[in-house]
Amino acid sequence: GESVGLHLPTLSVQEGDNSIINCAYSNSASDYFIWYKQESGKGPQFIIDIRSNMDKRQGQRVTVLLNKTVKHLSLQIAATQPGDSAVYFCAETEQGGSEKLVFGKGTKLTVNP
Amino acid sequence: KAGVTQTPRYLIKTRGQQVTLSCSPISGHRSVSWYQQTPGQGLQFLFEYFSETQRNKGNFPGRFSGRQFSNSRSEMNVSTLELGDSALYLCASSFGTVNTEAFFGQGTRLTVV
Image (cartoon, rainbow over all chains, first blue to last red; front, side):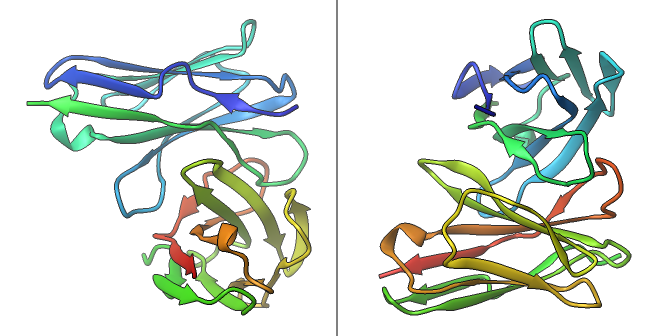
């Protein structure tokens, strides 16, 4: 069935290190992928997205990599800061005119000062 | 530019009652989606409305329903509440064209007792 999963439920890094959060998806028809950050008590916040015709996209301190061959998505955060501590979700959508997002379970990132 | 607004933020209801949650999307956005977030099931898609029409629906019982008004504001209703309906209900808005960024509100925390 459709599912988007994550390899690790928790990730702990030192401030200043680079973080890599991974995600596996199962629906080969998915063509749009998004990473969200959710802080305690808040709704998910859009970080970065990537379409299936790309394999890499960079934002401010973040990079998303997409490997369609193995259906794998990753989020790289450079120079991780305490403010990056949150739960990170990957999400996918299919082609076809709907905004339905299928979310993974999430990875809790803890940044130690 | 105002973000997605959900009301109320917190709600306590008794089993068997019904509840209505409200979502005001970002100005200009025509798509509103609803999600249920629980620790056990994560973020699950409920339904999506676009131009007052339900465009997609998740795997939830008929007790969960929604609607969208001509100004794109949306409401969701849950009837005959069960303890398991306790969750954070999130609303996301987007332009609604092919796979565009979805922005989330802060959510409504529903507790059923």
